[in-house]
Amino acid sequence: MAAPMFWDGAPNALAYLAFLAFPVVIVVLFTRMKPHVAGAYSLLGGVLFLPEVLEFDLPVIPPLNKATITAVCVLVAMAWKAPQRLGAARAFRGFDLFFVLALFGNVMTAMTNSDVIVTGPVVRPALTLYDAFAGSVKDTLGIWLPYFLARSLCRTPEELGELVRITLRMGVAYTFFCLFEARFSPQLHRWVYGYHAADFSMTMRGGGYRPTAFMLHGLAVANFVLSGTMLSITQWKLGKAKGWLVAYMAGVLAICRSSGAIIYAVMFLPLMARVKKPRFILPVVLGVLVLTFPILRGTGTFPTEWLVEKAETYLSEERALSLWFRFDNEDTLLERARERLWFGWGGYDRNRVFDPVTGEDLVITDGDWMIQLGVGGAVGFIGRYSLLVLPIFVLFRKRKKISDRKQLLLYSGWAMIAGLNAVELLPNGLFSWLPYFYSGVLAGAVGAIGTARAVIPLRPRGPAARAQERASLAPPMPKPGRGGRVVAA
Image (cartoon, rainbow, N blue to C red):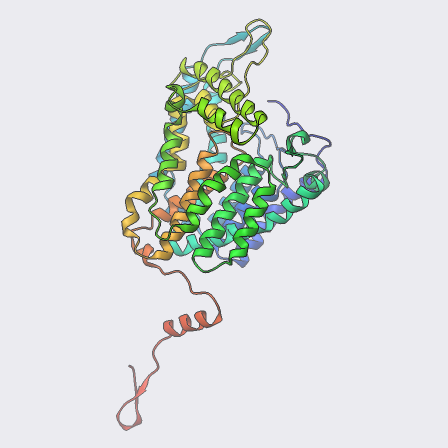
């Protein structure tokens, strides 16, 4: 396995210390907060602030990085402080059955790729069942575990409201790093951990800088800020945030210089702000687009030429050329994927196209959907992407059981985040497991609809409201009976 690439430097002592200290931070959080609150802060904090690229390559299992280490540490903490939550989430049942399908696909991928691929001087080995095992462990730690933990964190509408507030707080905190790097260039990762996580030239866009903070790519930061902006609208509609917060988050999103995130914001943020009673139809449309995208691209139904023309008209010739180049490479990779449609080509770059004489790589892959389709085939794609969008479909089916307007706003806001983060995997890669975290939270919250857990009201806020709540829960005062004796009411 290739060693990780560190740009402009190497990990310093603080980079390694961060990994060693983070479990201690998680223990402190779990001893001072409710388990679901501590779990949310821990999961988001690990992805947002631990060093990128740095890995620990242990025997037998795939390398451990900040995403997998965070998820494993939170799992241990949840088993310590809230094992009943993990049991109630019912691992590998319900929504998780689609991940079981993906694991089955890993085995079949290994069994159907027992041939060696030779392209010029490069030989790509045949797959074995060990490759299926290693891939399954990697997927379990990197995809399923965050999804499962997110489901266990959110078991009621009240907890969904708390997770909305926590994620928004983390989003607001991250904007300060974005503002700093937009002005002084993306240097925080190098200053703190000793190296850039990726090629610095990728941060320059439109005469300025695209903030990366402590994440792998500026696109990942922009998507997180976009999610925070959407949550600020949800809180504003609930009366728990001011309008200036929405404007501030939208302004920071603009300086993130991600054309995709800005287009999503222009298209969907006004709709979220204006719609008074959510219908959930828009997240469903996004989910359908995600699941059917390989078919739309494979049959030529998706309007690639029209999108290139519009990009040239409204954006720039450079952006239009970049979009055309992306679609052209996808067409080449789709032809390759069709050769082993159901279970794909597996790892070792066997899914890519190389010059048969020189062995030179002839394509560039951007979208995660294309990677999953080429590596795991249709079975692998369906297994992984159904985890992301199926909670949206179930929410739409159960929508009439939600009578409280506040809960409708919470569910619809989070469903939009889950849908847009899934759609973002069509043009771009999977930079972290945040899309699976969002969908996992929604899956847990959807499970409470129509059950006794769903009638738990949102907790009142403010000193007066909390005092009133305590008074309503206090036992009734005894009243005097005949002869001055006290009797129970």
